[in-house]
Image 1 (tube, rainbow, N blue to C red):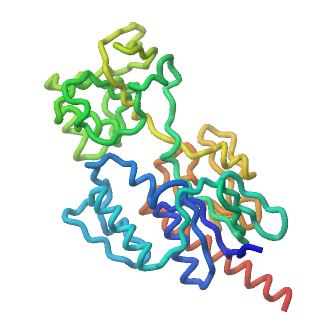
Image 2: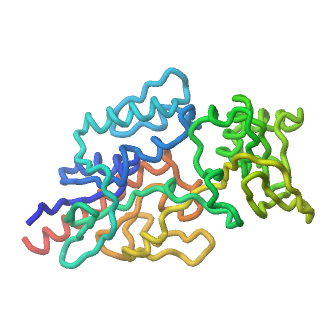
Length: 330
């Protein structure tokens, strides 16, 4: 019979790492199961991306995060989390997508395509970056349409449309413009939102004001074709030439997976998973949620800096339950 771990964590992002570290501190055995690479979402961030947060705020596991500048780069973050995992000697199984989590007996069964793992408790820390929000327009499945951005070099001299105006969209638009793409932005709002980071907002507004980036405000995408895109602006249908589309309209947790394993979500517009905020335990005893996934579609509610306490709450709850059981059967 395979080993039964005290805790199985689904997802090897910063939150999953933090949970495993807290488990080790508490003397609990753990396993982390990850569908891709270590901190897979960060690995798939744009290659030249700089974090909005300072390196100090991203620290976990009492490992100092040193970066050249105040705000670290993607590569510095990858190096940092590799060092954290090495220091704590975390037990991580990579490239194993969890297909299902069930509780046939007094412990959970975590099924991947390759293996079956067992644990007394399961923590879902899967984030949201793997599921992009959709435009739901004709032509969205064309190869020219991207929901992720890696680097601007391939788009030099190309007519590129960026859909959206949040932090990611504005950063992508600026990066493309500076590398020589002809950039248009299709924006639902009447202006660049106020919550765009203070060092990005004036830059993108100035590029738009100078005509270096063409922005269509109060606009909604209608159709994407191989050589052009069509959108509606103030009830007028407009078609412009286009080579590539970056739909930077956000991402969402894997609600299908959450539902499959029995986690209930609110019926509001955010589909927030139901859990006890004091322990992060769902209605299924021993099944917890942590990190960004706790916010449902409201993905800006939780991020690395303000969700580290989730790990501590979860481990405290598990230790408390173990203590109660120990007293009952002593």
